[in-house]
Length: 145
Image 1 (cartoon, helix red, strand yellow):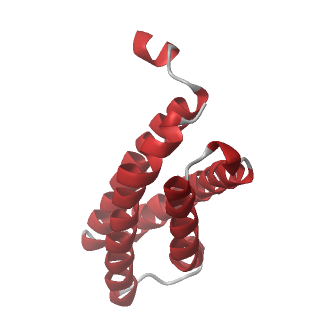
Image 2 (cartoon, helix red, strand yellow):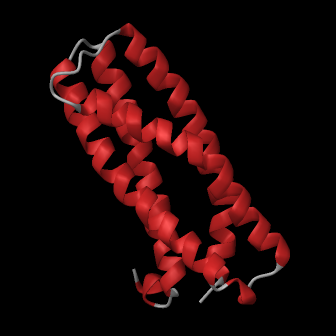
């Protein structure tokens, strides 16, 4: 607790994002488990929670990375390239993720075996992206004031 008082604004933001990643992972696990237990009501509830946290998380990240690039005179070329590469390569995945979650979080959308197969594939892609973010982008952002 005391340690977090001395963190910079960006370090606190990164810590918050890492915590959100854990929540997103837990929700994904809950969605899979509740679906496999034929508990569609809980699956929908978890999807709705996932949609909410994911939208907020992605918006904050987009804004932070946009601001870093906007003020890129403080950054080295490698850092700028990492941020640009991440934003560009994640754009399609982000859109697919949000469309998928929005579709299946809707109360009247049927959830079936096709849903869970696609969801598991999407989760694996997102897990890989989170790993990339945490290993490459978050350390960069943590160094910025």
